[in-house]
Image (tube, rainbow, N blue to C red; front, side):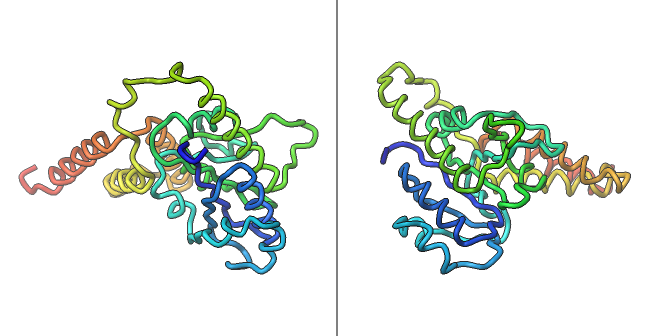
Length: 251
């Protein structure tokens, strides 16, 4: 598994240190070690996490803390949001098996984000993702705890990795080497912010009551294609040209 692409596990606003520790234990069961924490409620480090990790100390010791979800996934080209609800955001919906396959086969870093224990991911968190990762479970009892959700995703990643390794050259795709990898999230965020800065003064996000919904729709549109560096640079150049054209007193 050492040579296979490993996803970053991002816990967004986790509430209990015990749950962080249990999630770390679930990760290390399948060889995942990179954990990122977004604004943990009780701060970090948390003394309750160690005993619950049951020996998965390397995951906790290397865990990084971020103020926002956007910062935590800024260097990732693919973001998968685990949720059972779409929350008004239109995204492709995939299962844990397909997410595992994408991690192994699509170039660029992958982040899988999990929401807080009580409420799950907020709409703003899901809006950062390329797709929604959900697991078909009993519709009459859809309650998974954080560690259970992490271990299901980690298991599928591990299982798909073994499946691909046994497939030999069947899955080799030479044309993939000629394809530029998707940009990290931070470059995509900069492009979206640039576009919004041009649209806002022109009243595009009016009325105010619909502004947030319009921004989410726009973000959903721009996060779907999987832009590469050249595409983002080209579109940013177009936006810069339009910006200069707008400010040119001769127009």
